[in-house]
Length: 402
Length: 81
Ligand code: SF4
Image (cartoon, rainbow over all chains, first blue to last red; front, side):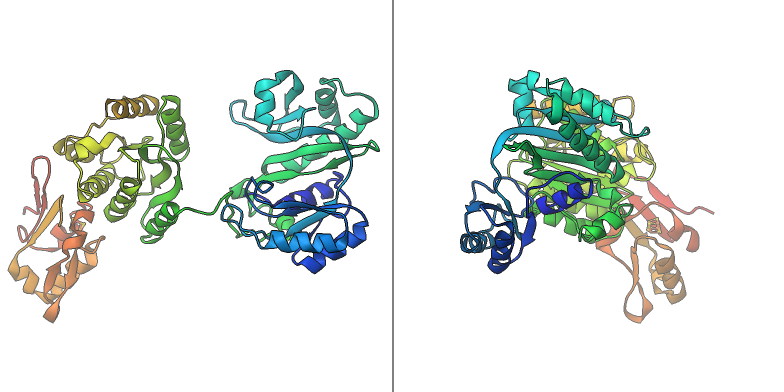
């Protein structure tokens, strides 16, 4: 669950991370003028949307007076940025910046630990810095069990040559960011840029926070404090037509899951599942050089009709050449019923299952019955002796064959 | 049209309203429905949902309900005595 910038900043301020003066959300030009008046100097006004590219879209404007601020807010509130209507305009003091830094805490899936990243080249994409100027990036993993010690942050920041008062001030901010990350089950807590002002103070100019979706219940209290409805589902972009149709298919029948569809721009349609298996399979396809057209989960024994509808949806997506149907070993989903649904969907779209299904790898309950069906229709299938990774490789190889 | 499963019911069973009701009750995927005068009907659009649970075979007399697989060995599920 992504936070708006103003919510991220409110969370940071609870941890004593300094923000620019003012830093409040206006929902009308009048409110923006009042905040600007209170600040009493030049201000920046930023559209509150859950998407990037707001600067280019005119969603970030500057004003020197309250009336200019009102005018800018009116413009911003009338924008639609990549399909997002601004939830307000953040108004804060525009401060003279001496240097920009990057500070972020995220989750390292390989190390299975949180990692803190610091750079003295902020304001640009941290991935770009890592690629072009790796000497300007420092990283440090930390434990999810032991408390975060300020010393860890100090060591990290000092490793890039920061010292004196700057080191002390940055250490406090970094340590508090790590605590916010751990205390609230975040998957990302990022300040970019973290600015050092001409007077030596540090302020968070922009912030990103992503909360683990499943933590909404345990984090109910902080969400309420920030005015966020825990039931609110948020994505970085509005759902596409394709994704909406996927959700409708899933909702149309309570039997099992056949949905949770996310659209990508590849050519291989995916029907995948089994807990973490779906993510593993998605990654395996990419690792083999394949281009997924979608991410989509099945599981919990969906009905034949539901699987059929999902197959038809995926095949209807422009650019999809074949589909791969893969799961880990399953006990709660019948292989034969999935096989029926997928084959039916392919046939109803007017294709031959043997040509459209790149691979079918669902080992588990009723697999021998499922394999009889697949064999009848000439579909390439495999059992558990073929790993998920190998199956993904076979699907990608089929795509290359055409 | 069903691709994978067909169900055949003896017309005598279909006309027996009590038995018809039982079949409607036991099938987990609504393959049976009651039509006019409580006569049993097979719901074509649900046939492929058949879970092969054989509950329908258990409630009717041997041989009077047949569940046919339209794939593989074209096996026919039927209750024998
Ligand atoms: S075998 Fe089970 S699912 Fe199939 S028709 Fe009979 S009762 Fe219904």
